[in-house]
Length: 271
Image (cartoon, rainbow, N blue to C red; front, side, top):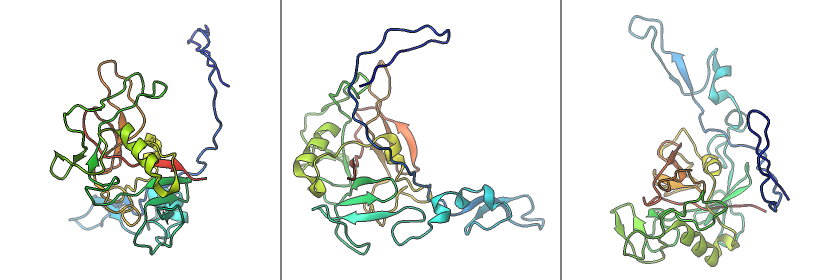
């Protein structure tokens, strides 16, 4: 159980918060790297045409490589593309929850062997619950985590979700908002599990590969669209709900109005 006591800059304590029950969970422990395997700022040459100009070095070799991202972390120590680009390490998971070989051509989830997170895989099928192009409005009725704003349940008359290929509403296995989508996926028992949820911003960032566009390993996450993806993290804004997410065009963290349709990729903790 936890209570919080606010203290101002003068050391004056405020009212103690209510007691809250907390379930301990082990941290992720290890972080993924960036996917960057090239260096930047290298001198291109010494002749008149290139003198003073700089550019990227594709193989991370230089007298200044120790200062480069490409020579730090897992991208340098575990640069093996057999299970994910550079330092990433993924395992394909069947819809029954069984690990598959890297050569498998049909999988429903992806386990991140570095962070211990298990991710939803997407498919290019507009009538599939996991359609890669489906967009959802951000919506959460959980007052403990929505930042005081529930978001937008359904601003349109249709009961279907949005496909970003043509910006029209779709039929089939769709949900109008993020909360409904989480419920639908858990009811279906994706990969044999029923504890799927929206990821945090940092969890989404953990699968960003900054060397690619879309900013993710497409070998393990095929059909990913280079769009904004919702996180579970709200933004404190008294006027409207503008939750956070990651844009998989460049891997940047951004905020978006909850009434704007955006992609979703669910996550859970691997046992």
